[in-house]
Length: 216
Image 1 (cartoon, helix red, strand yellow):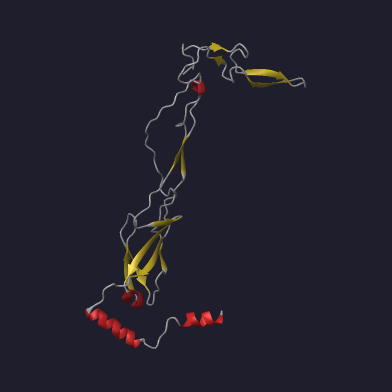
Image 2 (cartoon, rainbow, N blue to C red; image 1 turned 120 degrees about the horizontal axis):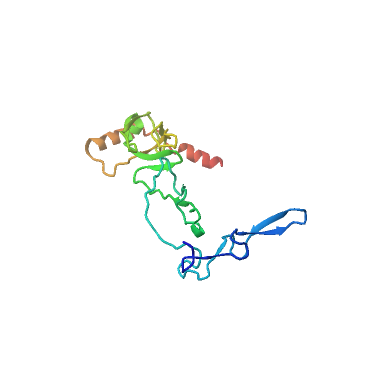
């Protein structure tokens, strides 16, 4: 808008509508500055609008659809050109910056372009090895080979199963093994564990720990 309640602002008498005033440089040429009376607009609202106070702009809100690109990160800003506040006196609009908040996933985490997931395995799978099916985000499961003697907390990598990058390629899926300890063991499973304990009675997994503690 014009910013004038009557709809017709008058031409600034100081700059004669140019929005600029000349100032001498003393070197044979002149420079220009924004007009101090109309602030460079060239027009003056004699009866400023009560809503916009003469600026020609008023606040409003609206909802728009925003395309979220693949691979966007939490707190990343997306710039929408020309969707910001309109310029004064009908000038071009500014830009709108949208800050993205990525909700946490119940299964997958994220580290840069890589996704993370924790997969429980049985004691037998960790000790003897085997194949483990792992879920992926938006795709079919993958099968990873678990080597014998895999410790709790080891991380394996499924290449190309991570987050989508801007160029369409994918990061990796980092799979952390979690050895599931049963809370209730009975029957054949208990007998097998008892037999295992007897077979390994001479082994002490904490021997190196105590040896290191003594030498420290």
